[in-house]
Length: 335
Image 1: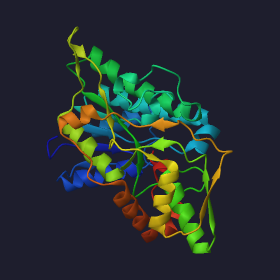
Image 2 (image 1 turned 60 degrees about the vertical axis):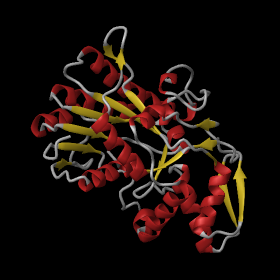
Image 3 (image 1 turned 135 degrees about the horizontal axis):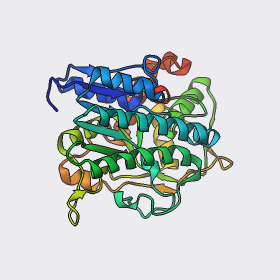
Image 4 (image 1 turned 90 degrees about the horizontal axis):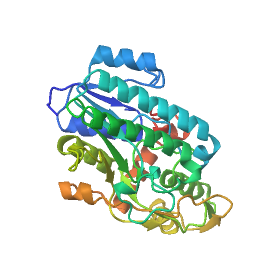
């Protein structure tokens, strides 16, 4: 990407989008275009088309989405499907129609089947049923990914649209909602509240036996930037057409959620007992990505899980009032 290029970061108020803006600024990019949800509703096709026709961005990082944890997804499958599909379709087609040089679509590891061979390779997509608790979100992201793939296939001289599948993310700017956040921020808040209030027990949802892979958000931003500079997808050698254009982003290490809880309790300074609430689902039993494609290109993460959680907790403490009031940017508002 040329230093003077116009770059649109969609969802810049969210956790991933804000990290990508930080990365671009660090690398010396100054022509970064952003819009809040109030300024641009990407679920509105007319607004989206008018924005792209006016701004004509050279590159796009598509991070805008409606996101949430298991409870949020399960309670609003229709909204997670509709809103994320509309955001994806409107933005991808507006980018294509306005000759965007390169487009990066942010998907998620939840697009892979629930019962998937481990570690998960890119080619396992659509080989078995999805996890039902986040099926709506996953279907929307798969549709966006496939639209990018089809555009590359049918218009190979006009498009360079890639999709990235990060593992579970956490870091500054996360969502600390008591019911609808993802596991890492939910536990950071829960253990911090228990410590502050002098309670001797903390409840973790599920059995604690599910395995997950976690990546610090600034590492994800670094990986996405690296891919925009170095990855254009793979060729289908038999037909000389674009092949797989999506790529996994992970650290290659997994942790049982019970162990994650213990690690967060130690970081926060909570010394009490951890109780497991089996009424709430575990979700997918195991989910670790095979990031061989990305690693072979030369990228590796730089922040360990413990280091990243300590940085995240420090950020939470520094902005605690804003996080708990909902006034600090969170990824659930990253539209």
